[in-house]
Length: 120
Image (cartoon, rainbow, N blue to C red; front, side, top):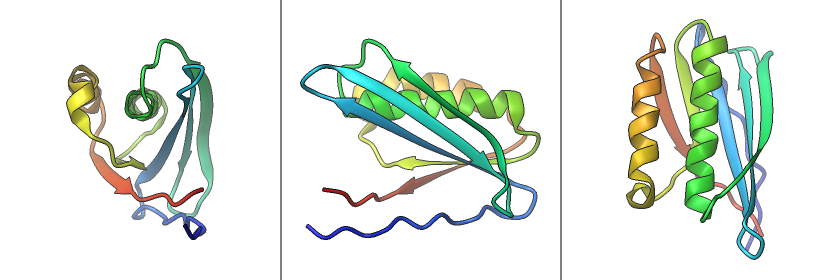
Protein backbone atom coordinates (compact mmCIF):
# COMPACT_ATOMS: atom_id res chain seq x y z
CA UNK A 1 0.00 0.00 0.00
CA UNK A 2 1.38 3.40 -0.88
CA UNK A 3 1.28 6.35 1.47
CA UNK A 4 0.25 9.81 0.44
CA UNK A 5 0.73 12.96 2.48
CA UNK A 6 -2.57 14.52 3.51
CA UNK A 7 -2.92 18.14 2.44
CA UNK A 8 -4.92 20.61 4.51
CA UNK A 9 -7.34 22.69 2.46
CA UNK A 10 -8.38 26.08 3.83
CA UNK A 11 -12.05 26.86 4.42
CA UNK A 12 -13.79 29.71 2.64
CA UNK A 13 -13.15 33.23 3.95
CA UNK A 14 -15.13 33.78 7.15
CA UNK A 15 -15.48 30.05 7.86
CA UNK A 16 -13.70 27.94 10.49
CA UNK A 17 -12.50 24.45 9.56
CA UNK A 18 -12.61 21.95 12.42
CA UNK A 19 -10.56 18.82 11.68
CA UNK A 20 -11.25 15.79 13.87
CA UNK A 21 -9.60 12.40 14.18
CA UNK A 22 -10.06 9.41 16.43
CA UNK A 23 -7.64 6.61 17.27
CA UNK A 24 -8.75 3.18 18.51
CA UNK A 25 -6.67 0.19 19.62
CA UNK A 26 -8.87 -2.87 19.17
CA UNK A 27 -6.72 -5.14 21.34
CA UNK A 28 -7.01 -2.90 24.41
CA UNK A 29 -10.09 -0.77 23.73
CA UNK A 30 -8.02 2.36 24.30
CA UNK A 31 -9.21 5.35 22.30
CA UNK A 32 -8.60 9.05 21.90
CA UNK A 33 -9.80 12.03 19.92
CA UNK A 34 -8.05 15.08 18.55
CA UNK A 35 -9.53 18.35 17.30
CA UNK A 36 -7.96 21.38 15.62
CA UNK A 37 -9.78 24.44 14.27
CA UNK A 38 -8.28 26.96 11.86
CA UNK A 39 -9.49 29.99 9.96
CA UNK A 40 -9.12 30.60 6.21
CA UNK A 41 -5.47 31.70 6.54
CA UNK A 42 -4.55 28.66 8.64
CA UNK A 43 -4.41 30.45 12.01
CA UNK A 44 -5.24 28.05 14.83
CA UNK A 45 -8.45 28.99 16.65
CA UNK A 46 -8.46 26.11 19.14
CA UNK A 47 -7.07 22.61 19.64
CA UNK A 48 -8.07 19.80 21.96
CA UNK A 49 -7.51 16.14 22.66
CA UNK A 50 -9.04 13.71 25.08
CA UNK A 51 -9.00 10.10 26.11
CA UNK A 52 -12.24 8.33 25.19
CA UNK A 53 -13.57 5.69 27.57
CA UNK A 54 -15.80 2.74 26.75
CA UNK A 55 -15.32 2.78 22.97
CA UNK A 56 -16.14 -0.45 21.19
CA UNK A 57 -14.94 0.29 17.65
CA UNK A 58 -12.99 2.62 15.41
CA UNK A 59 -16.29 3.86 13.95
CA UNK A 60 -17.59 4.85 17.38
CA UNK A 61 -14.26 6.54 18.16
CA UNK A 62 -14.42 8.63 14.97
CA UNK A 63 -18.00 9.68 15.72
CA UNK A 64 -17.09 10.69 19.27
CA UNK A 65 -14.24 12.77 17.82
CA UNK A 66 -16.81 14.48 15.56
CA UNK A 67 -19.07 15.18 18.54
CA UNK A 68 -16.16 16.67 20.47
CA UNK A 69 -15.32 18.89 17.50
CA UNK A 70 -18.93 20.04 17.23
CA UNK A 71 -19.19 20.78 20.96
CA UNK A 72 -16.03 22.87 20.88
CA UNK A 73 -17.12 24.65 17.69
CA UNK A 74 -20.47 25.53 19.29
CA UNK A 75 -18.59 27.14 22.17
CA UNK A 76 -15.57 28.73 20.46
CA UNK A 77 -16.20 29.18 16.73
CA UNK A 78 -17.96 32.44 15.97
CA UNK A 79 -19.22 31.93 12.45
CA UNK A 80 -19.93 29.11 10.03
CA UNK A 81 -18.04 25.84 10.48
CA UNK A 82 -16.77 23.07 8.23
CA UNK A 83 -16.28 19.82 10.15
CA UNK A 84 -13.81 17.49 8.44
CA UNK A 85 -13.20 13.88 9.40
CA UNK A 86 -13.05 10.36 8.03
CA UNK A 87 -16.04 8.82 6.30
CA UNK A 88 -17.69 6.24 8.55
CA UNK A 89 -20.54 3.73 8.47
CA UNK A 90 -23.25 5.43 10.53
CA UNK A 91 -25.37 2.31 11.13
CA UNK A 92 -23.49 1.44 14.34
CA UNK A 93 -23.74 4.91 15.81
CA UNK A 94 -27.22 6.24 15.07
CA UNK A 95 -27.67 7.74 18.55
CA UNK A 96 -24.40 9.67 18.22
CA UNK A 97 -25.44 11.00 14.81
CA UNK A 98 -28.70 12.24 16.38
CA UNK A 99 -26.74 14.03 19.12
CA UNK A 100 -24.46 15.61 16.51
CA UNK A 101 -27.49 16.93 14.64
CA UNK A 102 -28.74 18.55 17.84
CA UNK A 103 -25.40 20.30 18.41
CA UNK A 104 -25.36 21.66 14.85
CA UNK A 105 -28.46 23.70 15.70
CA UNK A 106 -26.23 25.78 18.01
CA UNK A 107 -23.99 26.84 15.12
CA UNK A 108 -24.62 29.67 12.67
CA UNK A 109 -23.90 27.31 9.76
CA UNK A 110 -22.15 23.98 9.46
CA UNK A 111 -20.75 21.92 6.62
CA UNK A 112 -19.54 18.30 6.88
CA UNK A 113 -16.63 17.07 4.77
CA UNK A 114 -15.44 13.47 4.57
CA UNK A 115 -11.82 12.76 3.74
CA UNK A 116 -9.97 9.63 2.69
CA UNK A 117 -6.83 8.98 4.70
CA UNK A 118 -4.07 6.69 3.50
CA UNK A 119 -1.90 4.87 5.97
CA UNK A 120 -0.07 1.68 6.73
